[in-house]
Each structure stands twice: as structure tokens, then as C-alpha cells.
Length: 144
Image 1 (tube, rainbow, N blue to C red):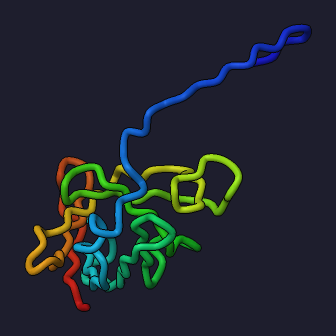
Image 2 (cartoon, rainbow, N blue to C red; image 1 turned 45 degrees about the horizontal axis):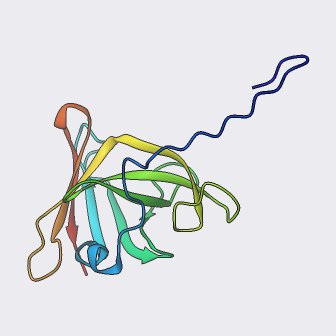
């Protein structure tokens, strides 16, 4: 904070509410490619997109094809529940705000929750994409 003749330096430390850096073992059940189909409330009904989930630089990362929004194909997946995740939007940085993945976390998109199915034989078989008030926006099925 600064005024004409005064400056006050404040150091604020906040404990993270959600983890952005799962271990490789915690990430393993979710890794793979999923084919997503949107419902009428999630976008153009029947439109397909592929979500490839990888463990990258210590974080769980999703790559959308085609991108969900212009120039947004890479998202950080942040666990908010045992099998529930949300998207984090990042910008590349190695100087401040490091999430553990070398990225600066710019925003968390809480409007869409990824509910991964309970893993079978070590792998989640699908995802329900849920919006506000638990509205189903789309589903995704593991393809590999």
C-alpha cells in the first residue's frame, strides 16, 4: 500500500485450499484420453472434444482438442474432492506464484466440475462434466 509520503509493506501468506501438485501415484488413475460429448446445456449438443489427461511437471494437466475457448487448450486440473476436479488457467512462469508445475495459477474455473468415475482396475472410465446446481454439461468416456 502506498500514499504520497508513506509506504506500508505487507507480506500475506495464505495456505492453499486445493492441491495443484498430486503425486504420480495420485494422478495415475486419471491419466489417459477421454472423448467428451456436450449436452444441450453444455454447448452445442453432440459436439465432440478430446481431453488428454497427463502428468506433467508435477501436476495433472488436461489438453482439449479442439480448445474449449480460443487459445485455451491446456488446463491444470485441481482436485476439490476425492474424484472431483476443476480447471485452473495458468500462465508460464518460473519466478513467482509457482503452482509446482512451473506455472502461475491465474484463475480457477469453479463453474465446471469434472467428476471422474471411481477407478476400475486402476483407471477412471469416464467423466461427468457438471455445472452450477449440479447440471450435467457433458460426459466423457475413456478411449485409451
